[in-house]
Image (cartoon, rainbow, N blue to C red; front, side):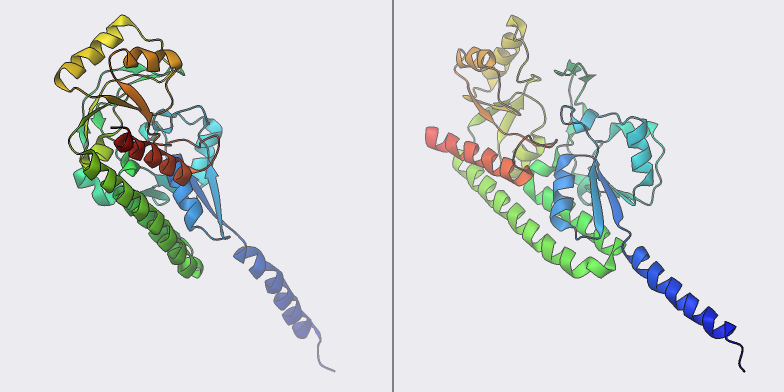
Length: 300
């Protein structure tokens, strides 16, 4: 009589692999994004084998976010970390991260970054910072946003070759939407011409360059308490740059809108949507921005 043990051992090994292989296949690729635009792009690209995470609190500007211990741990454990680049993630200088998971989404156009000047100013949450250095709101040039999306898609396909075809299909859809935004903004820039604009915050450099807009910036917050010195700063800009519209990153307080209206300047909102909006998503916010900008042409 043959020894049944080898046959039994073979059956047990087959049974073990039949349970282990599906469990391994179900392990998801964990992705962390450092601002909401990247998180949105990732959400448009992924398949079910990815797990997307976004750690930044809703009331914090991601460009000046400082991750706490739990967030640092989550970043260190991530399979992929989507970075905006262009000096956006200033906290990285004080955090130890593995190099391999990091995806610098703006690296492909880093040679065309815009250098900026700026003075320190205080945000509504009490943080003090300066915009001097490299302009980092890269994604409001929608052609640059497309390059960032392509970089994310490439890394996703390398991480999960089994999902490459679906990721590529999703990328085509996202690029179509970004191309539509780009086309609308180019049409606005052409219709608006060389009429001056003023911005409440120095974050519109790539928007201005991409779409031929003449924008001078001041360093205000939408809900700040306006002082005579603030209005004097605006008057000094208007003396050389006679804009009739100010672009705000969020709706200004009634008092601030009224204050600049007294100088002959009207308000329009173009939100960069760096952080997750209370309603809608990044694409909806950009479409609403464009609706408002196109409204300026009609109002002239």
